Length: 435
Image 1: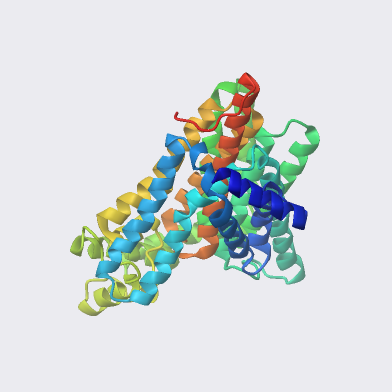
Image 2: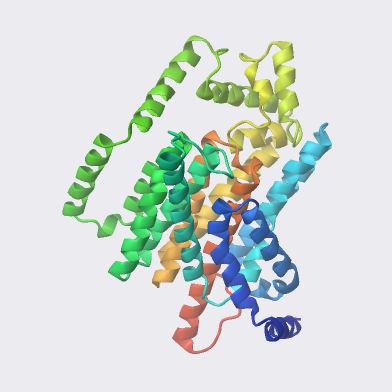
């Protein structure tokens, strides 16, 4: 089978001038920038990768070790838990729409097998796409601010929450590149410049959920590099933090003050409308819904009608919750709609298993590319875990596509780097790994 697929890929390359490795690498490079710049750009690239995967991916199953296969089964279990909850679903059309997004995450294994066939050639295409994405969101923010004259906004594709989250992710991966692949001053300069302009887009969007990830990223990097950081660096970092805190733009201070005010309003009157107040009410109501169907939940897609029911029976503090189709928290939403089965699977598949995999990859990394792949994976997991505290990103295709493709690419870089290291050490390729 492997030889047949390889022959087909070669024949395609002869007729089109584009071999399978080149095609996949081009798509990996295009995804980050098109996902933030072109309507349906991310879904289009994801679909093309998926179609290539259905045709060419299968021989690479033997390249996956136990840990990679654990990730694959974890994501498939997530989709299965969502499908199982449909037994309780009343709004079946909405349930299928939510399930389709879980199935996208469930294609992780197929996409991973496709990209694993690329040898160790994905770090630089992926980095190129991320840097272009960072400059793209920064350019859009500058255009919106100085040309359109708007104090805060998203872009022409997404609302400001999605725009801000994707901007901080592009900035973060650019920083990762600077600390792992920045072997030349030129590359470090470009990567940090890209991170800076994407950070401006994050600030411009006024997305508090994205801002929360900035100290998370800083803590992660300081922890991972703690042994290499001396006293002078620590002093410099503390001075830099003080300077940045002093120079924060007014909209950051305003949004922070507003958050404090909204918490006070909620404590005084939970029925009062506010952004944070709505989230607190949604989280409380999610636990009520889960308590009534603890095993499988109310059913995927039924969240909004459950909120409407709580309002009608008087169990909800606020009537505004009836306007929402998700809980603004990935774990609480999963508990409410898919029960303990889906909630536990979400926690393990989306956060814990990928974190464990990439952290172990970080400890074993022997090359700059391997460190880049491991750290970009850790940052992606940490970012989406943070976003998931206040936003149910699993209900939005742009987030689901980005999480899946970024995580798949990072894992493929790790596997490719490991394979290249073994090839150099003994002169023969390694077909699989059982570590």
